[in-house]
Length: 538
Ligand code: KIV
Ligand code: ZN
Image (cartoon, rainbow, N blue to C red; front, side, top):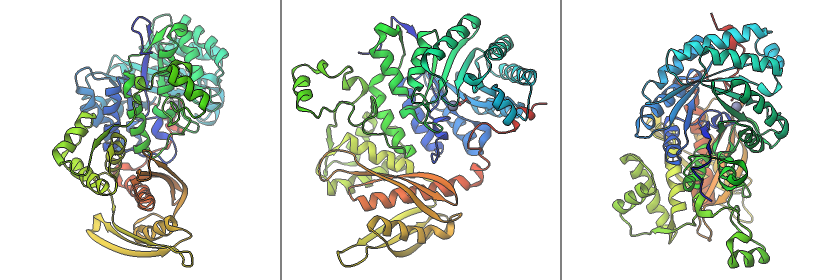
């Protein structure tokens, strides 16, 4: 059932590009962030939290790029940036948002006793209040849209929590965001807390919730918060985020849409864009979506048992509570074939909502032609995969796969030979390796070719392969996690050949490891916590 406009509106604050990106191994550069931000705008979320600008030059640039482009389009969402409660953080975040039509500064500070002791070096409640109030006042000098998050709110003494919220609202915070930072809340109790806060704030600011999923309760807690008066939910596409992730955008939006009868609230999300958004985020982050994931999993609308199939054929509503087309799962259509030209290809991508530059279209077209030689029917799912692969490859890559040959037999060890272009040196290297299997051999040869340019050993930690469409000639979609000198990087590659897809994914992860250590990516704390949350205030 599409969302109704007659219900209480709930603001959807998407943090895929900030908290979602903090999931281990994810590193989105400006191009990837822009691509996702554009899609989030098509999805019509209300707020896009684009990053944590003080974390690195790269993150600053990415937030600025989102603010300057997506944030200036007609009907653009609000663009938000995160800052610790420290003057330089707030200034930097404000700087990054200057280009946006509507911007929000989001400041946060730990409030629980355990965080005050362990992270804020024993800061007292009074210290924390003073620092938070100063940051909110400073933020208000840049914008009239300021959000304050008490970090670890759900483990904070309730009286202190209410006190600090009173003080930041008096100082000018327009949204107070109750952060269940460690996913500790359970629905009934959380709902009661939110009801108390809503009553206390009483219209002085909008009440928001930010739920993590450590106990698998992020969506349930967010819904209970809405039932108790919360006006904003903070979410990430595919539930990405620290540890077990954040509240999943697609689940909470579809729960509100499907059970509006009970919950009486709705969002402005354009739900038919959900599936495409989920796929794009999975592709660019390298985090695959589990098959049985609610709403966007491959099986979410698949019926296996005969009884279910019979029922669905008789009346879809026997076993489906949402329409597949309402979340954009209409089934892949055959769109292009081997004889399609560049013009038709470019038009098809534009019709699908992609806004690529000429170089990206050129690269994607080359991949499309290669694929068309191997696969008779190219579907929109194939095109989504190709485009995401080319965008995630990016112009700033240090390595390019020029060629790959593998051989294997029952009596000989698998061997791979690769040619890799070292872009910065304008040189190519040839390497070969034996392996336990063909994927292992291909990764071994790539490791040898790229190794001298890496910070340390590169080890494949996890490997996942899925087919983009049904059929023997389907594109294989490989996602990997690679450890380079003790840090994890995700990578993704697609090809009809699984070994080639694996090699591309492995190289994609190595490229990220190089990109991240470049000067523009320096000094990114992996989490926006850190001991100077409070000490860096004047
Ligand atoms: O989980 C958390 O506490 C956060 C805050 C910065 C809102 O992400
Ligand atoms: Zn969080």
